[in-house]
Structures are given as C-alpha cells and as structure tokens.
Amino acid sequence: MNAALAVDLPALAAALLATIACGTLGNWLVLRKESMTGDAIAHAVLPGLVAGFLVTGTRSVTAMFIGAAVAGAAAVMLSTLLRRVTRLEAGAALGLVFTAFFALGVLLLESQGARQIDLDPECVLFGSLETLFYAAPKEAPWYTGVPAEVWTLAGAAALAVGFSVVFGKELASLAFDPAHARLAGTAPRLVERMLLAVVSAGIVASFAAVGSVLVLALLVCPALIAAPHARSVRGQILLSVVVGGLLATSGYLVAAHADQILGSRTALNSAGMIATLLALAVPCSHLVRAAINRRSA
Amino acid sequence: MTASAIGANTLGVLAGCMLFGALAGAVGTFVLARRRALVADVAGHAALPGVALAFLAGEALGLGGRTPWLLLLGGAATALLAAWCVPALSRLRRIGPDGATAVVLAGFFGLGAVLFSIVQGHPAGSQGGLRTLLFGSAAAMGRAEVVALLALATATLALLILFLRGLTVVAFDEDFARSAGLPVRGLDLLLTLLLVATVVAGMQMAGIVLVVAMLITPAAAARNLGGRIGRVTAIAAIVGAATAAAGVLASRAIAGVPTGAAMTLAATAAFLVTVPYAHFARGARA
Image: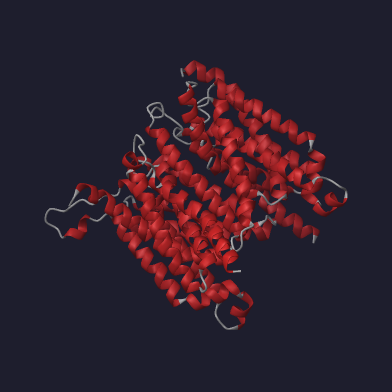
C-alpha cells in the first residue's frame, strides 16, 4: 500500500468511527442538557484505564475497557451522591469529582504506568491519531495489519448506533417529556443507566485514539450544529453524523498535511484541529439558520 | 538550573503556592456561590491557546518564549475571551448554558492543542517548551515565574478584599443587591476577572487542566463546615493554602508526579474529611 495512505487511512477511519460513536450518543446528551456530563466522563475514565492495565499487566483492551467504563459511571454516580449530601450545585459537584479522578489517573500514569503502558498524559489530552498506521502483514490476511484502536472504535460505533435505534423511542420521550415517559411505562431509570453505560463505552473507545478534547467536541458539537436545521430526532442524528464526518475529515487532512497546505514547519495536532473546526461550526450553523428564517419571513 | 538555585528558590515557591492556594480558595467561595464552577473550568482550558501564542510572540520579539508576564497576559486574554463567549453562545436558540460551556471549552482547548503542536515543533520549544504548563510543575518555576505569581496573586487578593462587601451581597442575595442599587453586572464582571486572574496565576504551578480543582474543592470543603460567609471564605483560603503546599511538597518528594495532580488529590482528601460533617450537621439541624 502507498505509504501516505498507510498513515492517513487508519487515522481517518479512527476519526470517522469516533464521530459516529460520539456524535450519535452526543445527541441524547445535548437533548437532555447533559453536555458537561460528557466532559466529566471523558476525564474520569483515565484512572480506570490505567488501573485496568496495572491489574492485568498487559495492554489488554478488555481490562482497560472495563476499568474505564466502571470509572466513568462511578464518577457520575458519585457526583449525584455529592449533590445530595453536600448540596453542591451540579456543575461544582461534577468538577470536583472529575478533577479528582483525572488527577488520580495522571498520578498512576506518571508514577507507575508511563513506561510500560505507552500512553503519556499529553496523548490523553490531545490524542494520538498521528501514530495510528497500517502495517501490511507479510503472510497473514490484510486486516490483521489494521491497528487495534480502529477495531475498538468500530465496535463502539456499532454499539452507539444499535442502542440509539433500539431505544430511540424511549430516549426521545425521556429527553422531551420525562413525566410522560414515566407514566407511559418505560423504565426511565433503567434507560438512563444504560445511556450512561453506552456513553462511557463510546468515550473509552475513542479516548485512547482521539484524546479527551476531541471526545468532548465530538459529543457536543455535531448535535448542536444539526439542531437548528433538523425537524426530527432521527434527522438531527443523521445530519449531525454526516456534518461531523465531513468536518473531521477536512480537519484531519488540513492538520496532517499542514506543512504543504498551511506552510507550517511540521504537521499540526489533528485532534485539536478537528475540535476547533467543530466548535466554530456551531455558531456558524445557527447564524445560517437565522439568515434563512429572516429571508423566508 | 542548578541544585543550589532550586534550594534558594524553595521558600519563594512555597510562599507563592500558599498565596495562590489562599487566593483560589477565597475566590472559589464566590465562584461556587454564583454557580460559576464550570466557567472556571473553561477559563483554565482556554488559557492554553493564549499561552502558546504568547510563547511564539515572545520568540518572535526576541524576549524568549517563556517570558512569565507575557505568558500570563496571553493566557488571561484568551481565558477572558472564552468566558465572554459562553454567555454569548448560550443566548442562541437551542444551545443553552450547558451546551455553550462544552462547545467553548472544546473549541478553545482544541485551538490550544494545535498551537501547542506548533510550539513543540519550534526550535526553541523542543527543550521543554510548554509541556510543564499542562499539569503544572513547581520544580520548573524559576525566580521570574515566582515573582510574577506573587505580584499577580497579591493584586488579585487586594481587589477581592476591596470589593468584598459588594461581591458578598451579589453572591448570596441577588434580588436584594438589585434593589439596593448595586451594579450586579459590574460585580459579576469583576468576579470573572478575579477568576481568570486566579487561573492564570496558578497555571505554572497547578497546570491549566487541573487548576480549576483549586477553585472548586477547597471552597466546597469550607462550605461543608458551614457558617457565615466571612468564616467560609477564611476557611477556604486556609484549606487552599495548606493543600497547595502539601501538593508542592508531595510532588517534590515523589519523582515524576506533576504538582497539579498532587494538589488536586490533597484538596480532594481535605474535602472528603469534611463530607461527614456536612451530612451530620445538617441532620442535627433538621
């Protein structure tokens, strides 16, 4: 395979799969006004990830995955508990819990795991899309050369889409009219907990490849870009994933080839570039909608 | 930096971190009361692009990339811009405060990541660059950094004390403040300024990712102990100073532990100690 493609294709695949996983689930978070819960989970999974590694001693995807999902869910439940016991407001309780979890993760990473686990705190923030590449196997089938992160992300994307399709009706009624959802006999608690678990799983899968900044951008921005233009929840999810995917692709290509496109000395951080584009697109999308409304009025 | 220089600097660093901890605790009390905890989170992350721009500007002007006052100025500029963006964006339909906070945080920190990669690729940035600013490092602070921290923290603390009455009234009884003719919007703007000044004063030591913990956690611990606002602010300042010092000493004792992480965990420990008190004290009152 062409050398440039061996670098660009896995990174693009990872970015797009992360867009599908986080972008889809982000719609539910945004509808429920829980965007910052996504940010909290994206920070809180770190100690679980490192602990999963330290306990098993290998970079086993399953162990790290379980550890991180447990940590993410535990952080959200702890902050709810704190609010009840100490009467802190929601934002402060989230901030208190996630900084503590993240600090614990950094401590574990720096004091124990850094050398063995091959994950440095900088990658945790900014991602390591640049380091994913396709190593063409000599004898084994072609797909064995695809980096493990891409497979994990494919699984997360499938889980996110499957969950949103199967429980779409319950999630929508829960987001728009919680009282009705309770009367209509759906089990709101159960669906809420499942959403929390699936969001944690999506974040964990994306975390190692794209970093915590881009995870937050992918959770929140696509949904908010699509919101002013969509007429139904399904339309909003579809539009958000399509627009998010386009922005992710262009952001990656601009950053990875910045030396040719922007004339910079080196390539730039691609997760950061995608996050910047996504965030800028949110007000732009709302301004476009306002302009359309003004013209038709 | 030689070993003796670090030794001579220790007292200065310790004084600087305790002053910062006290300031963060006191300002944090008002930040919590006005429900601005997540704005503090945004301000911390949003300092990154400004700091990176200041580094590049310092190199271009021949001042050196790590000129402390330039880094503080750059960080404060983008942090303030972000703090202004959050309410502006949340006014758009269907975004709301929660979504706006997340978008602004992600956008500014994403831009910061891009600029950070330029700094790390810069010839002057390769030796250290801004790496220590992410999670904080007391050990990487030289004399100039300590002086800048002490000056900014003292000025911010003086401003807080000067406007203590007005800030207190607005924080705890907005309606009364309005009817008494206090400039509520002006005082809120002042609180945002104090918040941003605290964040950038502490970023070398606590790091831009975790500096928000020093604004939230000591103040939350003090609130658990209860009492009048003056008492809560004083306790928050003491808890902040003590946990900041504990963090600096711990990060010095254990190799490789970033100061910001150590400070955050020390403050969390202090908070956890006060939780049962909050629970039982409320039970006794009820």
